[in-house]
Image 1 (tube, chains in turn yellow, cyan):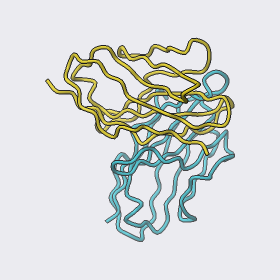
Image 2 (cartoon, rainbow over the protein chains, first blue to last red):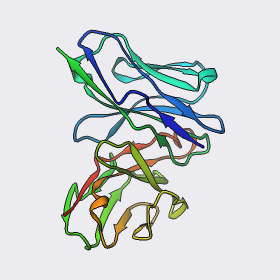
Image 3 (cartoon, chains in turn cyan, red):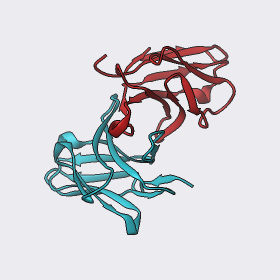
Image 4 (cartoon, each protein chain N blue to C red):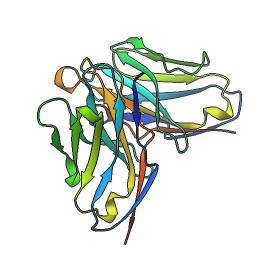
Length: 113
Length: 115
């Protein structure tokens, strides 16, 4: 079955601390992987995507993610979190022929001053 | 348009009434998607259009839900005889073809409250 698991429902980090949000996927074909961010009352914004090539991808707002095929993971990282990063983060997987994306349940990030 | 536009942004209705939610995708985007986001939940896929056809409508929860797309552009999601469990934010997204086929751009959503 195709699925995405984000094990952490809620994470709190201090401003300036590093961040890693976990994502594991199950997908029968070559996966295309995404991270989206949703601020309160807003739609989803694409942070970064992985299609092929270099397994470490850079995104907007200083985020990066690493694709590890052997672990079926695509974890999101940021070296130093800012208060404005507080939001909900969604990992998603899709195929290379277009079509729907399958989303995880999301991880809510809170940032302490 | 410049982005994906959804209307209404908020809709409050009474149980048993029908509602229509509209999505206007980015100009030139051939693919259009509807998702549902319930409180504290992830995004639940509802239906996907390629042009005016719906090759995947596996996520529609019941026959009370239907969607159509006309002219390869605007889409309408209709919920008949609304129930309280239909309360959610309904998100629309669109994408282009080729290398951009998987990159979904989302609208701000339509929040539906069924009393």
